[in-house]
Length: 434
Figure 1 (cartoon, one colour):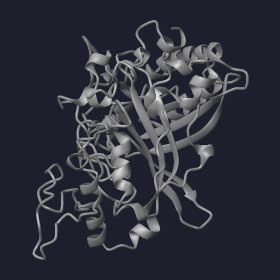
Figure 2 (cartoon, rainbow, N blue to C red; figure 1 turned 30 degrees about the vertical axis):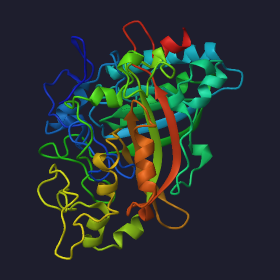
Figure 3 (cartoon, rainbow, N blue to C red; figure 1 turned 60 degrees about the horizontal axis):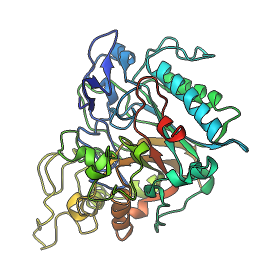
Figure 4 (spheres, rainbow, N blue to C red; figure 1 turned 45 degrees about the vertical axis):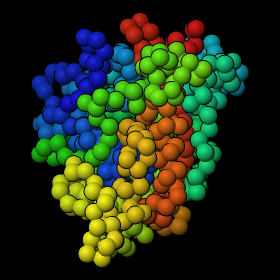
C-alpha cells in the first residue's frame, strides 16, 4: 500500500488486532482518464475498488486504523473505502469565528476517537462491534466560511468560484457550503455512526446544507486487489497520480512555503501559510444517464471511452496500464482512439500535464421523477491548485467529450482542506487562532 510519510510516522493505515490487510490503491472513478471529471482513474494512488481490505479475510477489515494526526488530513491518499458520506454545513445565524473554532475543536476530538475505534462523547453505540474499519474524517472550508468568520483576508485565491460549464445543471441548494466534511469507512454502520456524531456536535453552531451518500466495492469482495468498475460498467481507476511519482506532492498538496510552490501557482502573493500541507477538493454530483448509456452497443461504448470494457485496456492494445497510443491509426486511416474519446481528451499529455487525484464514490438515490435511475458519481478530486488541476481538464472535456451526452453535473463545491493537525491541535487551528 502506498502511504504518505510524515517524518518517521506513517500518516495513514496501521494494522490493529487481526494482522495485515492486503494493499489496494485509493481509487477514482472513470475510465482511465488522467484527469476526467466524468470519471476518475487511478493506479496505486487511487484505483482499487477493494478498499483497504484488498485480498484480506473479511474478519480483518474492521481492524484497520487510519491515523488522525499527521502532515496531511486522512481521506486524501487513504485507499478508497466501501462507504462514504459527503456533508456540507452552513454556520448558524450569529455564529462566527469563535463558534467555528469551538466546532472544529469538537469535530477533531470526535474524529480522533472514532478513527481509533473508540466511542465518542455521548456515543450512541451504533458501531460498538465494528472496530475502526478504516474510518477517515476530512474537514474543509468553503468560500463563504471566510466572510462569516471575518477571515476574508486569509481566504486563498484558489477558492475563487469555478467557471460555468455547458454540462452544468447545478442545484444551488446542493452546492457549496461554509464547511465540508468527507467521511469514509469500510463498514456502513461505522460511516453512519461518524456522520451522526458529527451532526450532533454541530448542533447550535452549524446546520446541514446538503448531504450525499456513496459506496464502492466492499473491502475483501475480490480474491485479489482489482480496479473497480463504475456504474456504467467500465473499469475505473488506472491513471491517477501515484505516490511514487516525483511530482506527486507538488501536484496534490499545498507546499510548506511559496518558494516550493507548483509552477508559481502558490507564489508569495497567493500563498496562505495555514494551508501548508493541505489540498483543494472539487466535489461534483455527476448523474449518469444510464438508460441512454445502456442502449449503446459495446463497440460504441468503448469508442466513447477509448478503452475496452472487458479489461480497461486502451483500444490501441495492451493491458489496463498500457499507455494510450494516441497516434495509432486503423485500416480506415482514422485514429483508433477517436478524437473525442473521453480517455484521449482527458489524458495529461493533452492538457499540459494537468493532474488531480480522483477519489470518488458511486451513488444511487432511487428512481427520479422521470422514471430513470438517480445514480452516478460523487466526484471528488484533490489538487494543490484547482486552476491548474480540475479547471483546464474540465474545460477541455466541456468542448467535445463523447461522454458528455451521458452525464449531467447536478451539484458542485470547492473547498480548502487544511493540512493535518499535529498532536494537541485541532484541524483548522492555524487559521482560526492565528
